Figure 1 (cartoon, protein in one colour):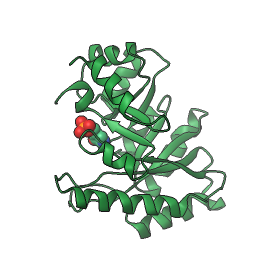
Figure 2 (cartoon, rainbow, N blue to C red):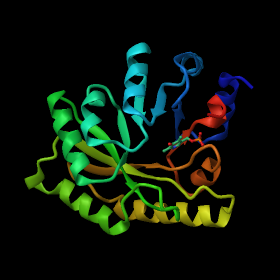
Figure 3 (cartoon, rainbow, N blue to C red):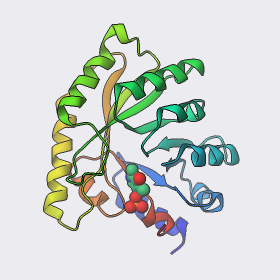
Figure 4 (cartoon, rainbow, N blue to C red):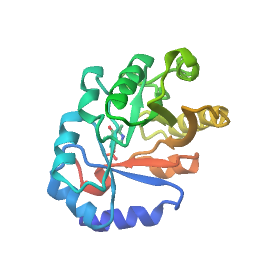
Length: 221
Ligand SMILES: *Cc1c(COP(=O)(O)O)cnc(C)c1O
């Protein structure tokens, strides 16, 4: 199967209201261009340097999503162009994104990453931390006017145990619904980013509105 065929069959299998992020990390620009020529305009990368190199090399109507863990000292490199940052997991990081966005005269959209997996290694906020970060973001004294929290992101445990994955997606959906009535200047949760190549069908069943798919489009890494 070619990249274009993979893309078309995935696009055909997901509902219209679900956004497809083509996860192109480690893949060469020529592969991304194949996807671009098939109409794909949203790409996800997990390293800021690699994403910036690709942004420089590729057409400017692409939306670049940072899906990896973000180091505070690298935010400045993507602040001029990044369209959505999925993996935000601290107020400190939000403050830096806000600062760099301001320097670029922009408002940068962010998702808060929630920890739903059983694995130790996954990043993210627990429910209590999430509640606290949302509270701080909305507090006037923090003056976070150059970021906007537009949703949540989560990664399920990497397992074949469907029951467990369902449980984790369902929990994230419940948390998302709980905050869906937030309606302040910089917090309006509309996007639920969950689901990858192995579990996106399930994620959509459980309310995902944005799937991040890499290997099913571009092949293994
Ligand atoms: C790599 C990655 C993906 C895509 O994974 P695939 O299994 O290749 O679809 C999705 N989300 C995040 C956060 C990733 O790092």
